[in-house]
Image (cartoon, rainbow, N blue to C red):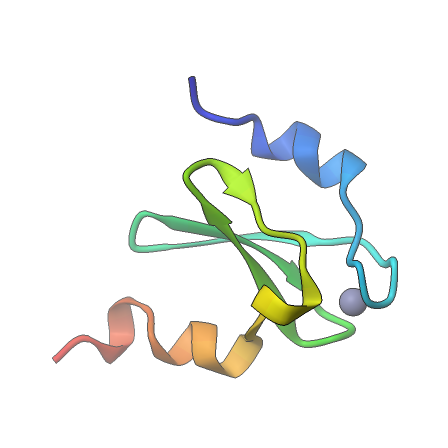
Length: 70
Ligand SMILES: [Zn+2]
């Protein structure tokens, strides 16, 4: 059963700044973005990885998505 990302967004907060997160989707991948910290927390195997060490810089997320495919 897929996770209900809308519900998770209400519950989860950025572990760095404790701010709200925004849902991001790219090419079958899902992530929770913190606009304040400019990072994306990836969702792996339907589990959001809410760890500062695992956060992907927003620029990296954007640049490795569909548009970056050659
Ligand atoms: Zn944050």
